[in-house]
Amino acid sequence: MPYYDYLMPGHPLPSFSSWRKAAQFVKAVVRDQDRLVAYQHDIAAWWQQYKIRLRENVSSFVSLGLDGSFRSSLSQDWHCPKRVRHQVWRLSELLKHASTASLQERVGITTRRVIARAWS
View 1: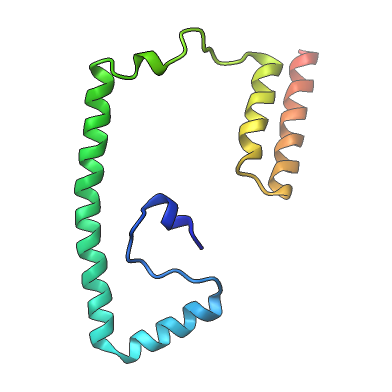
View 2: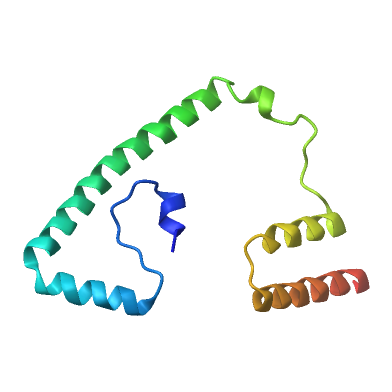
């Protein structure tokens, strides 16, 4: 799946579209110790460099933020929505990441909370 491709572009981590393909990969690599060691080396080396670049990127971002470089991009009138607007906002954010079952559960929880607040 492309999850790690989006999170960490250029990574050497093997990824698979099915458990069957993953199992085939593992069986093949276990039989070839040189290949296994090469994978381990490539991943470890990439991870060390990734952490260095990530640390530099975060440090740069924080420094730029402290210098005010992002001030013009920030909305001066943004505020956290209140009450019903807040719940609608939360649900819209959850919609971006939720499955149908988890969404139904969250809608039920939120509905019960809104009703409970209305009665209190």
